[in-house]
Length: 352
Ligand SMILES: Nc1ncnc2c1ncn2[C@@H]1O[C@H](COP(=O)(O)OP(=O)(O)OP(=O)(O)O)[C@@H](O)[C@H]1O
Ligand SMILES: [Mg+2]
Image (cartoon, rainbow, N blue to C red):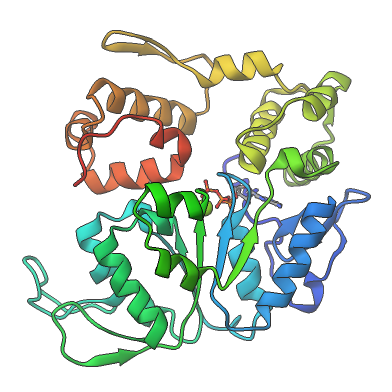
């Protein structure tokens, strides 16, 4: 059970020709494009837009709620482009402390700051001839945004502490789960950067707008698990009802994780917990400085609950929370970034 990898539906390699919409293995009626699965009109429209933008070098901005597959969209654009043999590098801007992001993106020269004992090239150089995916791009401070904008406009940049102008041939794809117009008004996203990034905007639709896809995707994920485990489990009628009636606010990620959990618990018939129960499993019981986690909570979820619970208990002070959890501040940032909106709901008082 240890090596199940639902994250790579096309593991084994897809060529551009194979990536045309086609019936996905196992599930009648399910279409796919690159790494993306879904047959709803919203997805077919997205496939078309990806195909259009992939043949250009235009900067693309992918907008969508958490778990809608923004990273898969970015990878699919890369795989369909002439850059596909060159690197695809994904950077989560929200997970990198602001004072480090410039060096991470553009590299730094030896001795350019305390601890810079060696020079290092940044992601822009690593991704030369390929694609740089900037996730949670709205989280960068305005000062860093100016540097990013300049690099996008000119295709050149300086390493931190460097004097040589470096050129890198990079196609940038950015993603955000915020509405960019709102991020400009309320979250300090520079309007000029927003327009520069959104030369070609793409919207990753939430599951609730993807008519018919919930059941198709669920059958696809179940078939993949059955195949990997040599099993032949099926959904109960009640599970199919839940699939259709639950709104899946965590989108494909929530759907996939729910099916994975239900698959493990099932002998032959896979039950999906009633939404009320799903909500109960999601929320730990917190009382003062202790919390209890439901039996059967997947380790990754338990870890998330403990991290978010501790952060809340520390009044949003990330340094204190990291210390209490015995992890570095960077690790805490990394974890929080993967939790998306839920982590953003927690109050924060410490920005590193
Ligand atoms: N259309 C899809 N077909 C198959 N799998 C999908 C699809 N959309 C999302 N997934 C799966 O759902 C999970 C979440 O996808 P991804 O990480 O790309 O979402 P995201 O929009 O980047 O989320 P976040 O905003 O939280 O970073 C991944 O495991 C991905 O493989
Ligand atoms: Mg993402």
